Image (cartoon, rainbow, N blue to C red; front, side, top):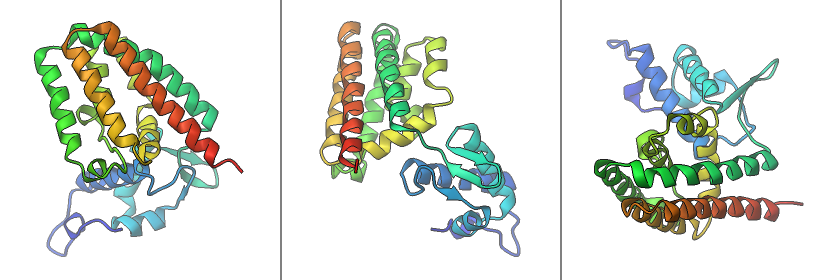
Length: 233
């Protein structure tokens, strides 16, 4: 897979290096989150430069940004690898998410403005248009304001809570959220759970919003455990 021709230099055009770096960063990040590049995979610069059709300068800038997001790990004498978590570490993170995102949903029920709640509805409407979600095969959420969970965390209006949940593990969690959602029947169930959480937040019912969020993340954790057990030798 190469980048489109408009991302490459032509004899009469010298593309801005930062624009190229941004494009290859976006492509690389999506390929990591979507599992095209598997956790633990080694990534050589020459191979990546060819794959994405860019020179090594913009590529190195993209790699540095992905390292800062903990999606890539650099090892001495080996180079860059796609980050990975052990199953016990991942389950621990999901248990923390259950508690903290449950709290975020509770706070969001009393703190989110009407405009912010409308934004949640709009995000879910956008998600519904995704072909893989319609086919019930996967549920891909882009980062930031296009991410349902991110919106609710921000909607808690609690900066300390946001620092904990949208810190160094945020992008790594996105990767595992997507890859473990790519199982039959889970994507549509997750979307339905998201809708019920929004309804509770809109109604100002903090108790219900927290319970539904904790249950939602708990089901995702159970799904991870079940899928991992199925692959045990």
